[in-house]
Structures are given as C-alpha cells and as structure tokens.
Length: 219
Ligand SMILES: C[S@@+](CC[C@H](N)C(=O)[O-])C[C@H]1O[C@@H](n2cnc3c(N)ncnc32)[C@H](O)[C@@H]1O
Image (tube, rainbow, N blue to C red; front, top):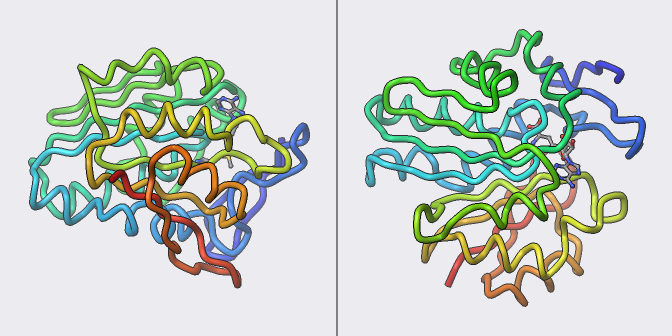
C-alpha cells in the first residue's frame, strides 16, 4: 500500500486492488471536512440537538469520522456522539494506527482501528468489520437511526456493489427524517439509485475539482 501526500499536506494511500486512492489528491483532510462533515451540518446538529448519530460507510483511515468528531466537539463539547462505521480491510485500518494527522480527535480513530470499538466520555464508536452490504443488515433501526451518513466507497466503476439501489434502501431505512447522506460521486446512475431508495437528491459542494458531490436527504 503506497503512501501519498495530498495537496493540503495530509496523507492518503493508493489501493492496488482497486487502483484508486482513498481520497482526492487535492486534499484528503479537506475532502473529509468539506465534502462530508460540513454538508451534513455536523457542527449545527451538535449544537441544536446535543446528540448525533453518524453512519460512516467505508471507514478507511477514518478521516470523515475524525472531521465529524472535531466539528461536533468544537461546537458542543458535551454533545453525545455515536458513530457506527463499516469497513472490510484491516490493512487500511492498520495504517491509521501509525498516522500523524492533524485532526484533534484522531486518537479515537486509532483506537477504533485497533479494537473496532472506542468509548470516551460522551462518545462511542463501533466498527462493524466485514462486507458493508452484509454488515448494514446487522444495524437495528429500532435501536438507532442516523442523522448523517458518509458514503465513501471506491468509485462506482470499481466498486459497483456499494452504489446499488438495494444497498441504498438499506441505508435509507436507517436514516431519520431530514437526515443527510453525503457522497463525493455525482454519477447519474448513483443519483437515480439514491432517488429509488426514497431520498431527495441535490448537488453537494464542489471541492478541489469541477464536479459537485451529491447530498441525499431522507424525506
Ligand atoms: C475511498 S476509501 C474510503 C476512505 C475513507 N472514508 C477515509 O476517510 O479514509 C473506500 C473504502 O471502502 C472499503 N471497502 C471496499 N469494499 C468494501 C466492502 N464491500 N465493504 C466494506 N468496505 C469496503 C475499502 O477498504 C476502503 O477503505
């Protein structure tokens, strides 16, 4: 697994099997903040609700969760935060354990990468290790519904199974009304599948490249 420095000086990796990077080369940390934490309104929700549940689909190095933890805790240090993450590759989790990244709460990400569970004060993180299509079915909608979903698989071309209507229906069934799903892809097929799963689709922010991402809101 090759380490790569992105343009905002944060590190990502290149995955040989998928022949893709884990993040945009224009800035890995920037992508987590601008494409995921900000459009999902994590800071605002932390303040207004005082409690926030996040589903991080394709956890990788955990940058999206790290950006969300930083935003939520800066806005409201007492916010109760629960993150459930899906990931199937221990090799990338092992890389997270040795990284020096400038997220304030990355120690929690390192803990979850190692033990698949981490708790600190008002924060609880749990990683369901295995194929996201199967693991998502283990989450009980009677027990938890999410305010925000980070959808960050490799591209639809390289990893089509995680961009299907069926998978999106499983995600949608776990979202609160008004909850926001954010993803970097703006592919037409992805947007059609999100709509078919009962979500309202809008443009996400344009960050570091010409195309916007996608936001999908639970109706
Ligand atoms: C684009 S990277 C995610 C980057 C990550 N969000 C981060 O901040 O570092 C895609 C991730 O999806 C994971 N993945 C690929 N196929 C998967 C599957 N079927 N189930 C769960 N995770 C999968 C890969 O191991 C990889 O970590």
